[in-house]
Length: 221
Figure 1 (cartoon, rainbow, N blue to C red):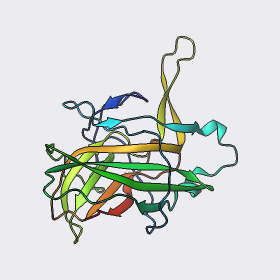
Figure 2 (cartoon, rainbow, N blue to C red):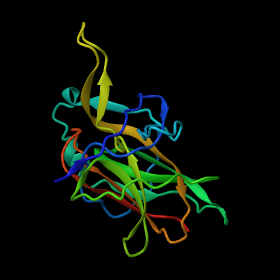
Figure 3 (cartoon, rainbow, N blue to C red):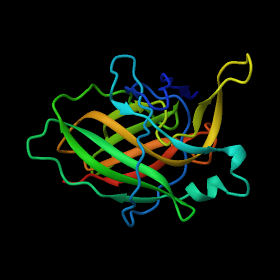
C-alpha cells in the first residue's frame, strides 16, 4: 500500500518551510544540456516547524488557457543543466536554488546556485516511489544510495489556489508549469553526496499521478 505524504500548502508569493510530501511525481529526467536562464521564485517547500525555507512564486497558465499546447509533451524530457559554483570549503550546510520554465516549447530545470548556510535540518523520510506518493528531493552518493531526504508540498508547481467564485470559496486549479524556482534550504553538505534527485508526479499540468524521478543533477564539487 502506498502512503500519501501530506505537506501544508504555501501561499503563492510567501515564504514557507519544508515538510513531508503530498502528491505524485513523473517523467524520466533528460541528460544534462545547455544551461538555461530563467527565474521567478517559486518553491512550495513546506514543514510545520520551519518557515522561510522556500520562497514560492509561480507564473503558470491554467490548463483551460493552454489551447492546443501539449503540456505533457513539453515536460516529458526536460532539459537539465547545472550553472552553480561549488560551495566554499568547510561549509556545514547548504541551500540549493533551481529555476524551471519553458523555452521554445520545451521544459527546462537548472540548478542555479549553492549557498552555504550554518545549520542543516534533520532528514525527512526515507521515502520510496513504491510506498509513498508525493514530492521530495534526495541527496545521493555516487552509487545512488540516499543520504538525505527533504519532503516538499510541490516542486514543479502544477496546482494553484484560484480566487473564490461567489460564495464557493477558494478552489485548486491545475496549471502547466511556465516559470518558477525551487529553494531547498538547510540541507547538509555531506561530502559523500554527489547528486541531487527530484521526485514528483509526472509534469503534465495535473497535480496527480504516481511519484517518479523527474530530474537528477550532479552536485558541483
